[in-house]
Length: 266
Picture 1: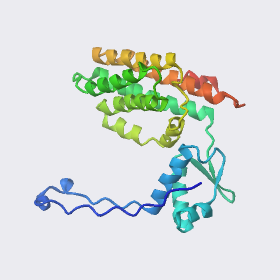
Picture 2 (picture 1 turned 120 degrees about the horizontal axis):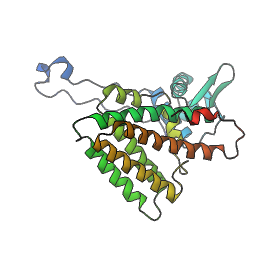
Picture 3 (picture 1 turned 135 degrees about the vertical axis):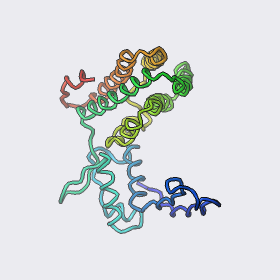
Picture 4 (picture 1 turned 180 degrees about the horizontal axis):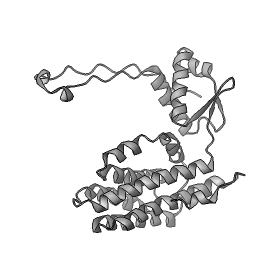
C-alpha cells in the first residue's frame, strides 16, 4: 500500500499583533505545537484503516511502516499507541499490532452511549427558554431534506448530512461539559469506521432515508415546543433505529452472538 510522505512541519505562527503584550494572560496569542512525526503517521494509518486499506485482524508491521515513511521505528511505535488509544488497533506483546475487528456487542454499546448523550442534549435544547440555537439545526435539516428528496442521492453525502444533524444537536445544547465529553469519546475512531466508507451500513433504502428525515423533523418540532421527555425519546429512537440497521448489515455472513438486552438498553 502506498502512503503519502509526511508533510513538512507547519510554518511558525505570525508574531503577536501590536498591543498583544498588554492583553490579559488568557487572551494572549499561544503558539501551537508542531505536529510530531508520530501524530502524522497515526493520522495517515488511521485513515487507511477507516478506508479499508487494512482489513480486520491484519497485522501492521512496525518496520514496514517505518520504511514507508522513511523514519525509525520509534515514531511508529508512538503512532501505534495513539491508534490503540483510539480503538483502531490492538497491541499484543511478542505478537505485534493488529487492526481491530468490530465486535457486534461493542458496536451496540457505542450506539447506546452516543444515543444517551444525544438524548440528554435534546432535553437541554427543549428546556432552554432561548430557542435561537435551533436555527442552525433547521438549516441542517433543510440540507438533509434536500438530499432525501433526490431521486438517487449520494449515500456518503446523506450519511454526512445525518452526522451534521447529530453533532449540531450536541453543539447547540448549551451544556459545555457534554459537548467536550462527546467530542472526546475514546471510541470516536471506531464510530467513524462505521460510516467513512463508500457503502454505509444504513440509509441504503429510500424508505429508510425518508424515515430518518421524518424523525429529525419531529424532533425539531418537539424541541421548539419544549417537550423535553418526548424530544429525548425521539432522539433515542433515531439512534436506536440506526443501530438496528447497522447490526443487521454487520450480522450478514457472521456467526457471532449478540446479547439482545443491549438492543433494548437505549
